[in-house]
Length: 307
Image 1 (cartoon, rainbow, N blue to C red):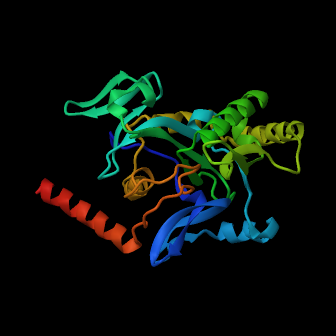
Image 2: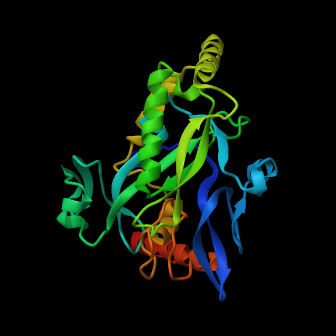
């Protein structure tokens, strides 16, 4: 295994609660009141919707996806949802410091060091709101790919708090059978003083509408027994995932660089709402061509430095 490379669950697509709209010739990210499921392919209009998006939209009220049936890949909640305080470089999107409120891993001239993490409000390194919560949730939607997942990224405390609590509770009540439970991502709305009484949306996790928690646990036990009879080793899978995540100081992918820069560091100040794609900003989002040009320039610079 290549050291320094985080081995993360295979990604089939993305889940967002936002969209990109065209205004005055500019592409602007805009908060939304529904889920969108995209593939990993982009065209001139942006991310191409995954076929599952159309499938779920057909059966949704008013064509808006407000819930998505999912299962977890792992029994350990922390493997399904990774959430930390994260600080990224404003220019290249690479992580500079990642912490949990007690300790952090920080990139310094001497390498990656483990230091105390006092949380963003009390950290001099994070002045100016540069450090934010950053969560990544991997879920299974398409049963045809046993190990493939869709990823939901968020910088919202509401989503991170709700998802972390639900995952922990469902693991406990099911007797460590979290990966076997029939669950669903659910979009919820709330109003706060900071949102000026307008609705903000966050992601929650519940058992599916048509089933009670008791029946869900019964189903989970049946699935677990069937898997064990077939030789499916969930304990080994969780262990392999834990080793993969721990293979690098930071969970990071080159493909995320531009998305992180767009999300964390818009060119002008904007409002902060829930979700990685559910925020209001006042500047245009770079076009696909701009992104590709920037990425190509970065790769060219790396090659030049290596030469």
